[in-house]
Image 1 (cartoon, rainbow, N blue to C red):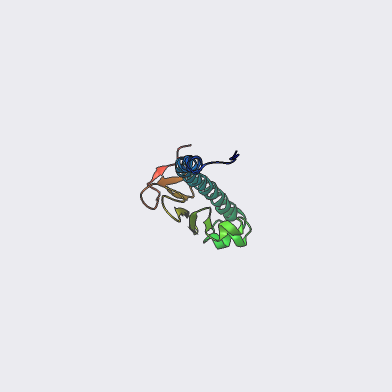
Image 2: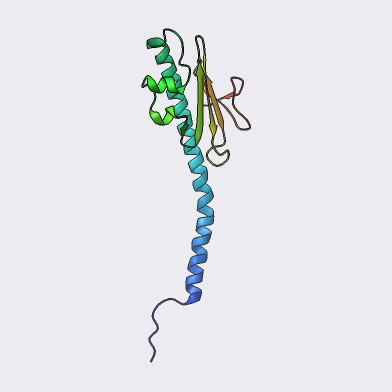
Length: 143
């Protein structure tokens, strides 16, 4: 008598097909979750930059805001990752002067690393746009 142990080819194919179906369902949700996490990180980074600009103005800038992220990094008000202008799938840019500053955050790969563009200024209100670069007339972020 022959004693067969193990799985048949059909049984293995069924298991592989089931794993493929589960992966097809899970991967898009994982990508959406990653994009949402990147957006949350971008919002937090913008809050950090706003606070850093205000701190710079009150302490080192004699009433003027920092010219860019490099100045904030040199003053040790933001870390080197954020100071580089790229963090968690977003590209950050900031400019400032005597009376005002602006901050923009754009996804490095729209749709993949994030779906919204963000903007803030000395008012501290974070605004967003889903179609193009956000400005001071874009929708405010609902908290």
